[in-house]
Length: 381
Image (cartoon, rainbow, N blue to C red; front, side, top):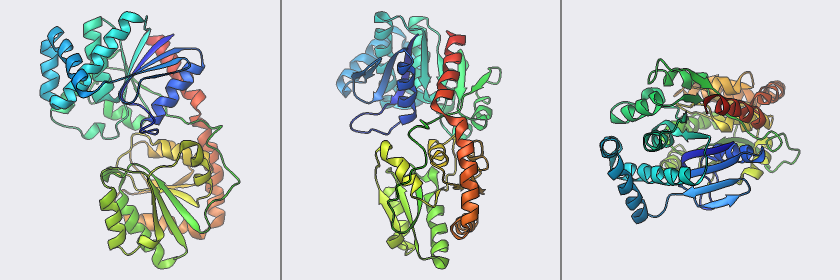
């Protein structure tokens, strides 16, 4: 099967972790003998075995590509421009032209547009130009809260897709608000359980709580830090390691300083994926006070490495964590601190939840996901 995956961004040397779950899916499909073509916005062109990546070119060339599409489908192009702005329209329209050029060169069996407001929109416009079918794979945990013009873009992309795939039942309910008559297919996200597994090596000298995620307001780090302050008032012999970068980095570090806990909060921008299992395994547990989550790959990584999770009862988090952790109300640092202290002080509870976490993780193998994705592809080609 020849598969075209469209994504706003794809891992590269510059950013090796962005949308890493899409990369893992593409690589696994390629390993199974499929020919995979990735059309990506923020990435680099290259060939990796059976996978070929086409990157959006520089700004000037992207504008020229976008103009080509605008001349062919002016009505749809101006609709897009009105709803996502000039920069957003140029980015998407340039990928439409790249995808159309790919379809002329290769016999593509299925087009899978990732992210309902980007890859799926590119796939939708490509379907108009090239008379093709496409699948939309949704990811955004805020899908149910979107309003205004962007909502119209998503509605059109979902309504015209031959199939809509989502990673959780929570996100499926949100997607139905855009296309109530369409069948939504749930295919859980996954990780490589051969990579993410308990490791005997330990790298921390002190007890450490691990948190990994984009430094963004939606991840609720301010509440995690407030909870950490309460924890440190009772147990000073513990650190919080936050791994990630993002627009709120300066503000989050400022909050830690203002709370007087900077000595116990460590920040690392990036850890190579192959090294992550050691960090997970060396931690007492994983904590994230996320306010909205469609699924959460980091939760699978954590439970696959055998550590419990402390997080919030939002979106797809309960589906992922199962009985492998403690979930509390969002925006509630008191409940969060109570759960964190409970795990820090009760080794038997940690061991019990660790066992349940490992059992839960078996549901989310990359092999299971790819087999289900292949079924969807075959059904809708």
